[in-house]
Length: 138
Image (cartoon, rainbow, N blue to C red; front, side, top):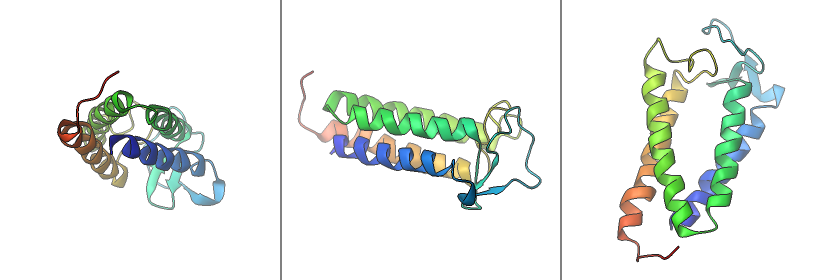
């Protein structure tokens, strides 16, 4: 079950990261906070703030998930790490002083809440579901 999570989560984030580079899917940012890296800065699907760094991180998380899905221990590590990563991104995203990841990537607004949802799903598979699974061997 955790391997399926890693694969699906990875595929979804990889696709989202790639789609974030398609200009027709990213509306120009109007009135958002300034970033040190303005390349690709806009709202994906008119909702989620993204930029070049944000999209690259999504692609990285996606590739990592697809590779992690090859084994149960790697999938568990992936799920747990993403629970922490996206939980931290949520917290940084709701604090005005850090909601642009120190000028690198926009993680505010609806995106912060999507990070919380991602953290909760990853936590379920990394901790709750993995604890109920039969023991595995590396």
